[in-house]
Length: 395
Image (cartoon, rainbow, N blue to C red; front, side, top):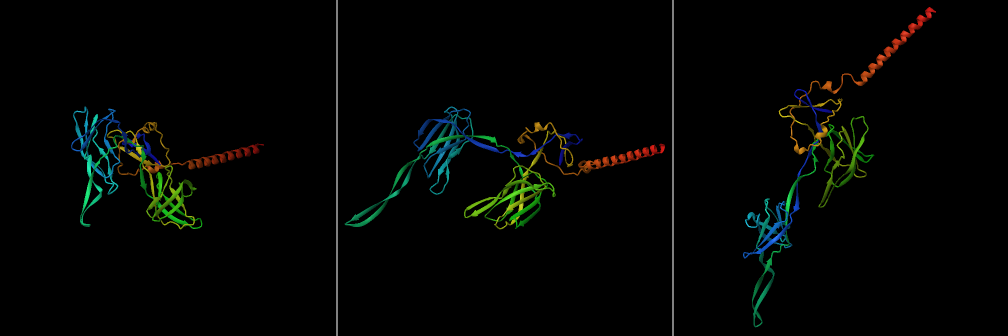
């Protein structure tokens, strides 16, 4: 199928047709190197650690309080400064905790707004706490061999919060590699047939020649693992051609659950008819409810002019594909730097039948040539015969 772009005054626009891609924003961490320049234990049971970053271009955004202690909850405040004199509060009273006594929950990182600071103050409150001892003492008062009273005494102990290290990280945002955008397409003429002699199930379906990348089996069957083979052809009288092979499985045993019901295609073929062969061997055939297909989404990339109406014309299977020199330039354009345009209502071209096929096909031309040659040959033979008859009469 041919595809062309034209302006309203029928001027052709060079265009590149390519799979649509999408880049995602990825955030990566990088450690910010710091050095400790001060440590203070205050009278109100707090510690204050002053750090200085070593590289001016680094921007800390995450402070991690690393500790091997368990079952704690502390309040952390962080300040930033350019000269170690004037301080600006970045975070105040942010909790860090470990509740492993009750559940597997732990938070030891604090996020601060980015800023061009050189010095950072990290203040940790309640650095020392009195904790009830798990051991209890029984005091017994006895007189004359008889126990008069007993008292239970609980002791307390001092527990200091130990910080192993304070790690500082920055973040860098970047775009991931371009992932192709996929869309779900319509499955047509789905048929399922179980071949008992060959111990296999044949699933046939057709498409609108979409760029297929994945075939997904829809079934409620459980605990199976079957090898499969996908074949395709363009026309119903063509020979089936190999496309892909793999294994379809679903395992649900106790708490373990794993399934792989999709067959991935190494390329994006555009065939009309497909046949999926599932080998059952001696196992019962699967109850197949349907097939889902995924494929690439394509986009038309071109240099657009403002306030110019563009018409997209497609069809004409017999036309030669255009070759534009501007394609090499368009291939370098990233999808993130392009504008998106939608399609308007589809209008049938009244001259499409003339564009799809020439008025005289190659076979018709060949037949006309042969017919003319036969007529000319008959004429030459007849003319030669008349000359021979005239020659015999004269002699």
